[in-house]
Amino acid sequence: MKLVHLFSQSVFSRWLSGFAVLAAAMLLGACSAESSTPQPKTPGAAVTVAVVEAGNAVQFGEYAARVRSPGAVELRAQVGGVLKKRLYQEGQLVQKGEALFQIDPESYSLALELAEAELAEVRADHGNAEREWRRQQDLFARRVSSEYDRDKAETTLQATSARLQKAEAAVNDAKRMLSYAQVEATVAGVAGLEVLAAGNLVEAGTLLTTITPRDPIHVHFTLPARDAAMHRAAFAGRSGEAVETRLLLDHERAFPHAGQLNFTDARIDPLTDSVEMRAVFPNPEGELLPGQFVRLQLPLRTFRDVVLIDPKAVTEGPAGPQVFTVDNGNATDEQTARARPVELGPVVEGLQVVTAGLAAGDQLVVNGQVSLRPGRSVSVVKTVPPRVHAQGEQSRTHAQAGL
Image (cartoon, rainbow, N blue to C red; front, side, top):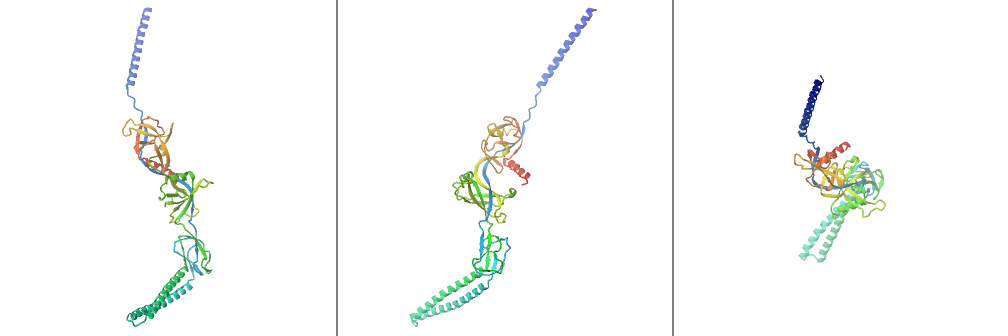
């Protein structure tokens, strides 16, 4: 009985060992099959790229400025008389040559009539002298008249000619005095308050009102000495070239007309370390008012054949500013990101000036670069022109700001 029990244990042990070997073999086979199955590749980071372009850019400096009138013009009477009426609305814009006051013209009309009558009389005497001169010439030629009579006729003709010129000048002067009875604006601008009301007696030189010109109009501003030096260096040797300036009004609204720099002080103010400048702007609509606060934009530097990119494409790397570009950009696979250090200039018109580190034709990552590292595979999902992308971002920023 004991022998049978031992035999049963031996058979069970052998069966259990075989089962364990079989299970181990099956597990090893499964692991081998799993390890031989190809693993899927990690997808590349989705990025948007822009093909880099080179171009020109102008850096503008922005400065606080004040609008000033070129200077108020005093309108004075040129003849005396009773002031009959004011012909304009105080504070309105008047044009050069527009009638503003009327002085009683009666005495000047009579003076003109008298001068014209005198002129008619002298013309008659001059005509008679001409006929006598021709007659005496004929008689002298036929030896009927003496030389004395001929010379006398010539002298009379010369005297009446002089009297005729004098009478014509008197008529012109009377017309001028009569025209001065209507006082006209000498410049275009805004007419001020009347100094004397109608009915007052005025004389030549009496102040009647002032006119403040507004078109063109001056804008005064000061430039820090450093910026002034930069501006001088940029425009050195271009003294005959007009320097165009721009204005920003309230809420960053651009003034529609460009101006020109027309004065630069020759010295630096030691108290403020700045240079006084002035620009002149056309102001046909009268939108700019004397005393108004504005922002003036003045060109400081010109960059030629530089790379212009979206400022958001620039990140900070171990060595300073850097951007990411895509290598093998024309292939459908194996696209990798490459970090490239760059040298930066200013931001101009929403575009970052890159002076070194990029070249035209490079594929610049403009979206998705935050999570990139050098050598990481990428997947280009979209390609856009760099200027379109940057200007689109700028437009959205302005729209959010309500501009």
